Image (cartoon, rainbow, N blue to C red; front, side):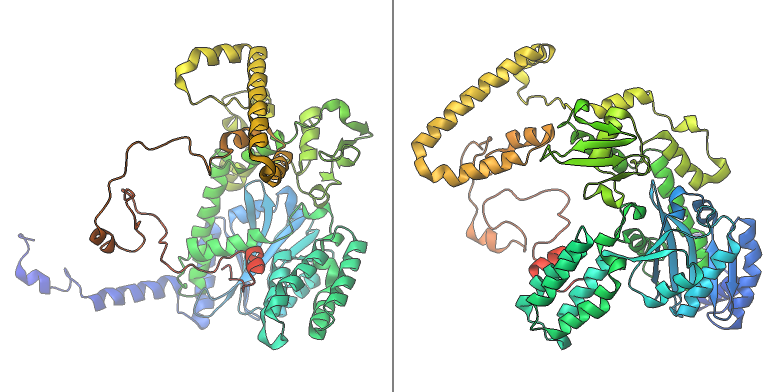
Length: 586
């Protein structure tokens, strides 16, 4: 500053004014993004189309109706995913630019979550706009949906225009409704004042509809439907609403009419999350300048987000699948290999609660006859077949080297490293042996008895005898306490037994032993009396601080303020239980 002359501050070439800088930005925006609306947008799109093509991005569009299809390199490679021919999630959003263009995402599940198959920008949410956008995919993507040309089923929300357009373009595909949106629409209808539903009846009516939705067989669904109609016959509008708007299309939302082809996906949570990510992470909750800037965001920031997400999975930065598999392995200890019956590639696994009940597992198609496996989810019975027979199904958790390599290839294309790059430091056999170990070694907190601990772990029989002797002492103490306190302990003993009955794994049992009675009896007692504070000190404290003589918290403040008004939770089940309206997700 000392070397600058006072005249330089008045020199617009050196120190431009705010209006000058804003004008430069307006000129740059007009040059690179074109006008906000009008024919100039089409001209700028034609001009930038070649620039996108040099980076491997394909842009297809038509003017009447105005529709744009965006295919980035990751989106093109996602059509080769094995599940892209089975199930596709479709969801739309708007209010992302001044013209309120509709943005439609097509996604398919993969090992790392959801992978985008394409993004469609349209002028509105009419059936004609949707059909034009879907036709652009059908005409320009050669290996669309795994080379099949259409997926087996689409999972959407309850949008008639979207569903009809999908049926027109891909008549071979089936459309299913997201059960969360179905439940949400019913709950909103019950809260609509013009329907005259009493508040005390809303929760019970919602529960009766849920019984229809979660019925396991068509006969059970029909029975629950008749019960719902008979119980609430004093609400004719409710009976008409259920019959006309839902029961008429029961095959699209009732679980009794679904099978394993949806691979356990009953909701379109993947597309809901993708819309939220686009609005928050990509746009930063700020509307784009025009449709050209929306295309730029999809081709740059959205592409970078998915690339980073997939590489995190390939480089072992996301442990969700591994922890899920480890948790299932712990639940397989209740059965031995000899109890499983094998009949022509069909495995019959006894139930954990009722040994006489058998579940049929077919690992080749990834199906089990249990409540979870019948809809294509990976259940503990399929995990048992893998544990004892090393059979891997199509819905096996993505924990193998091939899964990591495949997702890395989705993110990097031909630049992906060799498959050996994703191998672990330990051999695969050792990793599997470690994952199948069902015993966790819990060390004692008392560090003064290391010699005894070492000897007990080296001699399992000695450790077992010690446990049994301690158990005898506990039994004797429990008997003495029951004799002393009499009949007042009967109900609590029943609760104690009920909690014991719910324990099925070693980890649950160790947690039960370590936490029994901690709420009423503390193992640690603070020595000495507390130092009291002056009454005026308490009066001067800000809201949220303790009103007693406890030590004030130091360091980083808490993330939540106890006096701040709480927002309505985005939890439909909780809101139904508390009989309050539901909040929107994005």
